[in-house]
Image (cartoon, rainbow, N blue to C red):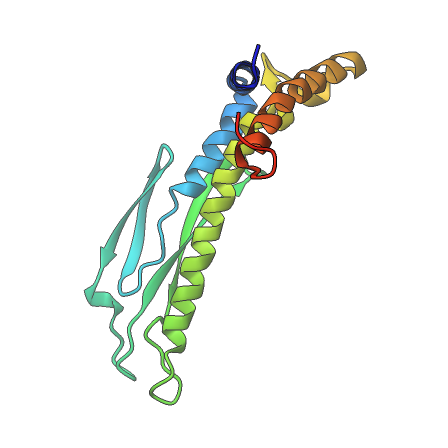
Length: 190
């Protein structure tokens, strides 16, 4: 068999292990939590948001654009959404709150410190979504979120854990070699 066939076989086994290994209740809850963090809304530059409810993995909110203007200094407010998970509540649940920020503030009338705060909040939000997406990907390509019929990676004894990790390693060897051969200009193509 050639390298492409080994690559496809290894990738197929990794996909099957990722799907089967993430079917338990705690695995699904971990994935849903990360999806909720991805669905957390971006900061609103000019408007005050009010959270109505959390339905499923989505945050329902309304925005009032008229309430965002303040009378003093002619500045305006924006909204930053803070999506959280509280493992100590009974039952553990998802939560969200809003923080009203003065994104229209200026320093000495011309330095846009509020806008800089909005840009930093927007970048923070983007990195949080990227972290949640990366976590979901790692759940599927590694045995870290392993859960089958209530048995997690912590419940496996020594031999079963060694077998599980060995299967992943042997599946990743042709995948890594294929990627190396496809990308490396010194080794060549297929």
